Structures are given as structure tokens and as C-alpha cells.
Length: 219
Length: 254
Image (cartoon, rainbow over all chains, first blue to last red):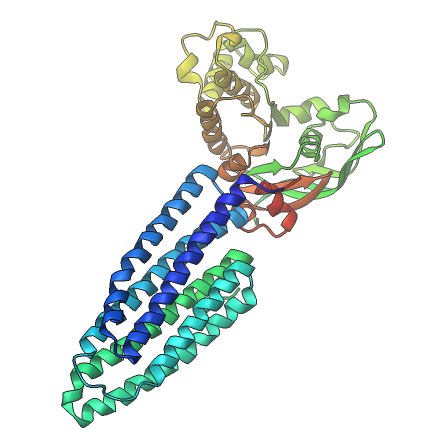
């Protein structure tokens, strides 16, 4: 039986998907501004975070409204509470992307320290994980979601690699310290993004199966 | 559910003539807990409730097989005294049904017919105690001689609960006890039910899913005479095991 409530839940789903696609664009733009050394793009990313924040508030309001009016239970309850948590993780990723935009503006004041290889790879991994998490949400695909949590390690390893490499450059020449630190922080931001996507994937498993897998807790 | 079990039901079947109304039901009902029964109309939940204190005996062609044990005694044993069974298993109905008597006499009735008091002092004491227990005493203590029909619907229902409590049953069966009440009266009854479980085992049939979620410790879901799922309430309303349970409680059914 199709319920009117289902329309409202679909509307909520549309909004969280919109949130995810805005966040994904932000990551892409932030990394592009870094690789192509485009200041205008970096400024744009920083400013566009407001739009993401607005959608976050909208999704939160929708969730609260549905909780109050529909008093959902079972799958409906798990869906709405998961969307609230996913929403907040997406907003944090958006913040991190905006922050990268800010750091790029600082970096552009210095010559390029080294060719960037691992940072764009990290960004690609994060974006692929985010894209898959959204697919997992739409298709209720927990296999895909579990796979995302496993990929978090790859991003962690790349971060360690970037850290070591940039540290060597900074030790060689202390002129490299200021921009080196910004680069390390950008890599750290990407690593944090992957952690947030991992949270999202864990929420999706809970939503679909009612099982908690976070903190390595799989009953 | 590792509590003391008050009611044990094993391979229980009930029939109205040819109609097989309860199909091989197995369920353990813990003492001093609230067990809610939910399910679509005609699923057998009321039949089950009424089988616990043999209210269905009055229906022609009704028969049962299997076991229905309260504290180890088979409810359907030939030697059982049905009147004393019903004294141990009280019942509250969908619509408040006070007797056409005063408030006082409504509560006194069970004590009088069962001769459960020595003198007037004890009678009065017991009546006051159960009206307090039912959360009605403060509202009626000065009007005990008034007709029960002068009370509001919610007050009448609490009077019926006091009437059930006064003979000190072990189990209280409630068949949609708030179906005809407004939200405030409903809230009062729900609060009351949760206080009462300290001393009684409560089985409640409700069509209101949120009510089961609010008050019950355990919830059972019946459909077409079968017990489909039975679990602690928080599990039933967050992640039921069976899809059909989820479809029913979220209103996707039909």
C-alpha cells in the first residue's frame, strides 16, 4: 500500500541526495583549484559552503517534522534517524572542502613544492567512496556499504605517504615549511572526509539491516 | 526475556465451530511485565486474550486444544473452578462497563460476591485502596454514593480497573482499554498500567501501535490466527525480524 508518508520520505531522500551532490562538487572543485592553481575557483569553493549549510538545515527540519508528525517506527524510524546522521557527516565533509579552498588560497602565494600525485588520488578515492555510499543508500545495498568501510584504509595509507614525503621536503629546506604544512593539512582533510564517508556507510548498514557495525562492532 | 514466567502457552489452538481462530500458538508471558498484542482485526488477538480467563466458554461451538498454563495450572483442566480462575485473571474491556450502581458499590461488588472481607471497616479499606491504585480516589472520594454513570468515560474506565483490582488478581487482561477515551484519559490509563505492572502481570490488546510502543515491555504480533513475531518492544519497533511485521507496524499493509 502506497502511503502519503512515502512521498514525504522520498522528498527527504531527494534532499539528502542533493546535499551529497553539492558536497561532491565542492571536493572536486577544491582539488581542481589546487592542481590548476586557480585562486578564483578556491574562493568559490569557500563561499559555496553556505549553500550546503542551508540544505543541511532544510534536511534537519524535514527530519524533525516527520519525527513529530508521523512518529515513525521500524524501517521508517531507522531511515529518518540515519538520514539525520548522514546529513551531519555530509555537512562536515562540505566544511572540510571549503577549508581546502581556503588553504589553496594560502598555498598559491608560494611556488609549487612538488608535483601532486597522492593528494589527487586521495580525492578520487574519497569521491568514489562518497558516490558509492549514495548508491548504497538509494539501492539499500549493504554489501557496497561494507566495502566502503574497508576502503577507508587506502586513504589512511596515502595520507601517511604524503606526510612522510612532505616532511622530507621541509627537512631539506625550511623555506618549504609554510606551504608544506598547508599541504599536509589538505591531505589530513581528505583523510577526515573518508572517515565521514565511512560513518555514512555504517549508518546505511544500520538503516537497512538494523545492525551496528561501527567501532568494529559486528554482532 | 529471562524473567519469571506467569503464563505458558503451548501448541494452543482455538476454534469457533469450523473456523480455526488460533493456530498452534506458543508464547511465554513473563510476570510483572506488560505484554501487548497487536495485529489486524480478526487476527485472533482478542480470542487469545479471552482464552486466558475462559471468557470464550460462553460461545457456542468454541473449543480449544493445547496448553494454557497459569503458574503451572492448566486453565482448561476439568477440575479447574472457572469462577476462581476469573478471580485470579481480571479483565478490563474496550468500553467502560460500570454496573448501574454507585461508585462505591461498583468496587464493593467483587468483594461482596466473593465474601472477601470480614467487616465494613475492611470493606471500606479495600475499596479505598483499589481506588487509590487505579488513580481515581482523589477525584471521587467525596462522591462515592453517586452513580458510576455520572463519571466521565476515562473515570469510568479507571473505576472498572479499580473493580478488577479490588479482588487482587494476578493477571489483568485489557481489551483495547483506551479505544473509547480522549487523549488525556488515555495518557492517565497508560501511566496507570505502567504503575500496575509492579504488582500484576498485564496483557493488553491494542490497535494503537504507538500505545504498544509506549507502554509494553514485550509485544506480540498476530495475523490470521498465528503468532508471527514476539519480542521485546524496543526490538519490535526498531528492527522487527520479519518483513511482514515491519510492513504491518509501519502501515504498509493491505
